[in-house]
Amino acid sequence: MALLTHCLGASSWPNLPPNRPLFTVNPHENTGTLLVNASETLSSLNALTCNLAFDLDTSQRAVMLGIQQMAELGQLLVDRALEQVSPSPAS
Image (cartoon, rainbow, N blue to C red):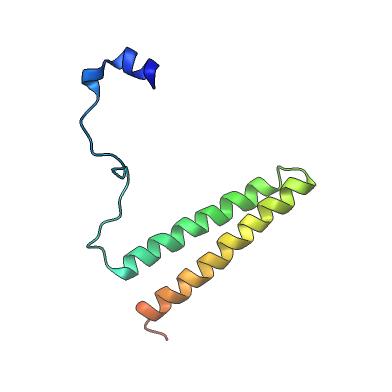
């Protein structure tokens, strides 16, 4: 941090309140949209961990597949909640 302050100069740092979040979720977004985005994020995590698992050795692969399974279970829960909030017309 001292090197950054030295290189950028103390005046370059904005006066931000401590612990200000870098990323936020729109507080006005509806629940269905939030659940769809959560489902898509978990789906991406599922695909990434599954692909990575097969580039690892046996012990690391087992850990990665455990993480992949937790992502899949999380996606199932989010998808079920989404069905309850916004049922499809066929339901």
